Image (cartoon, rainbow over all chains, first blue to last red; front, side, top):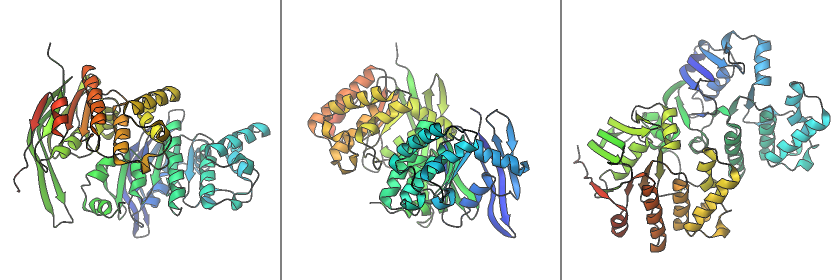
Length: 256
Length: 233
């Protein structure tokens, strides 16, 4: 099976400071990869650089398009980058307010990305939006309400609906469950888990929570100080950590 | 006709290096050879600390072997799990190698029935039939129907263990690894598990397991594999 994404020797510096350095991995269709590590380890920098939201300082990211051709993301113009983000990718931010449009209705938030793909039929858009609200367990009666009237957990579910409605081939997620109550978090994890299975999503997800990685990701990449210190199957990393930093991370988790 | 060889371990060793315990090194397995054939049930026996569970995990590859080879017959060819790529290991687990641990890993909000049906869904079965089969197996394991639609987080230890067994056995895999799957079960339910294992073996599955209960061990084992703790290095 051919990879969807090939990351090779990727680095991103901020002046002298290292954001991330010498990162390589492949992502295959249908695969969810977690990037774990503590704050400041370079997880989000890596995610944003892979997702072409910022330019790499070194190395390359290659993406296999829907048509089958490879794109070198570093050489991509702004227009092409926007087209990919619109047509083939999705991005779920930690704070749903960064990913939603707060001044339009919930339904419009979901429909907007479809309209950007050229769908214009109002009743069809509304029907799809309604279906997605149900799918993420938001009462469809709230379709005309603004997301500002939603709780944090609802906003996050709305952002997930808005992102996935276009059936992206590749989704980037930055701590989608951080900052939510545990009960709300469980609901979102359950939702993501089902959608990942149903839609066969390929995704790269940043999390500091090892239990989230265990639940969702077949493979995990551990970062420390901007570098990948260990990579493998998630249960190998968590059950039999090799690197001192991974051992410290795993042994620091509270169990109930 | 001799039964097909399904799993072959050669010179397997496993050590743990504990970087935060003053670099302590634990040698748990060394120079271990084992062959497992279709239709047999080999029970690992030996004292606590002999590395029985470690061995099962090395085979399932959530522990990485430090030495040696773990050859599995998978999709008509041999693959060394100690050297396999992550996607190969996943493929082996999906189709060839099942593992039932002592404890159910509970997933918040997911009902027992869906936990059991999930491996069937992943294998491509439609949802109705998968649920139907999951229900049948839970029924056989005496998990009351009123519990099926509840997440097992609040179930008793024995109930959780039966959900776990159902999940582990619902897809017929050629090799089954069992780590004390009957520890919290009463006699009636141990009987059911023994029957399920006999059926799996009759279908050609090879079973490798740990059973502390002697009665259970005598019922299911076709052969014992003795293990001893390594002397402290």
